[in-house]
Length: 61
Image (cartoon, rainbow, N blue to C red):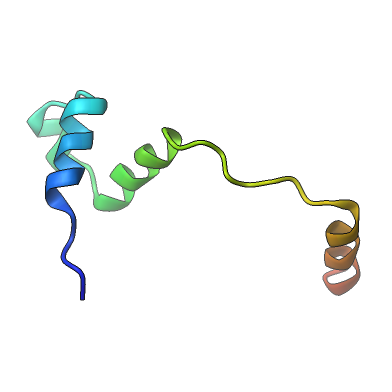
């Protein structure tokens, strides 16, 4: 099991988000990760017509 990256998380929380110690420690790791994702380039690509039609066919509801 990989240990939680506390050093990097604190660097991001204090350095990038400029959180106070109190605010940082009130956040959950999931909340910090969500904030981290906001700083990442959007890697999701829109669905093409073919993939969209396949989804519609397989999940018609």
